[in-house]
Image (cartoon, rainbow, N blue to C red; front, side):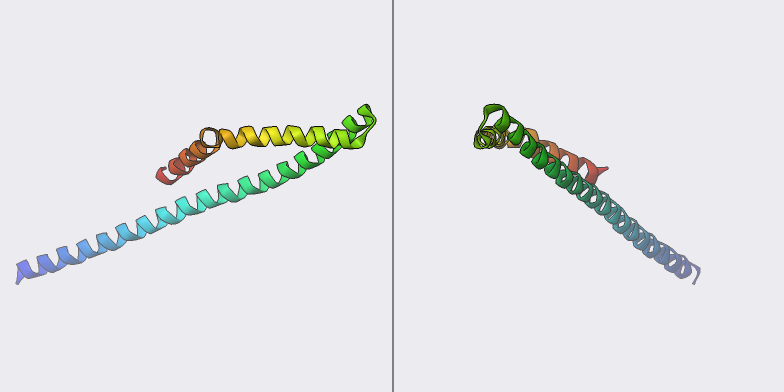
Length: 112
């Protein structure tokens, strides 16, 4: 009779341990997911503000170049050409400059 109580006690402790371990895994997954998503949302907000800043900076630069040259459209074409070249270079090196660092950042956060 005593060995049966010992086995039942051991069995209940193993079940409690398994349930606690599962709860810990769930909490760790929620923590990592929320940390990663909050970083992503913060990055998106910063990117939106940076895009608006760049937009207005580009408009202002276009107007200044247009006034210097005496023709506003030339200023806009020059600024557009600069953005086009920058976009092409960014597209060309997107794996090296964007994909790999972002992947490494996400993997590092998830495995932390």
